[in-house]
Length: 121
Image (tube, rainbow, N blue to C red):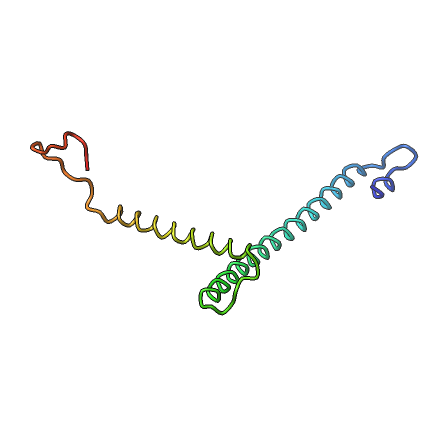
């Protein structure tokens, strides 16, 4: 805003000053937005690395717990471990069901002499 006041003289704008001020203002806003964007990209990258590191740390802790190398210091850790093992079991069960469907021979062919009526099995 100080640049704007410098271009104002006796209540009259100097020739082209408004346009120069507007161009200067736009250039500053573009540079500011570019800096913010660059920082946000770096923050996103660091956040992804942080999440990956937390995940790796968690996997190592679970392995150490299962090997009997550590014990959990509180019930919150035990609850989280229980949730992890339950989720792993559910994923394993779903994987099994998906593979069973994928590699099945398909629907049974219904014969006219069958007692099953018109439904597929």
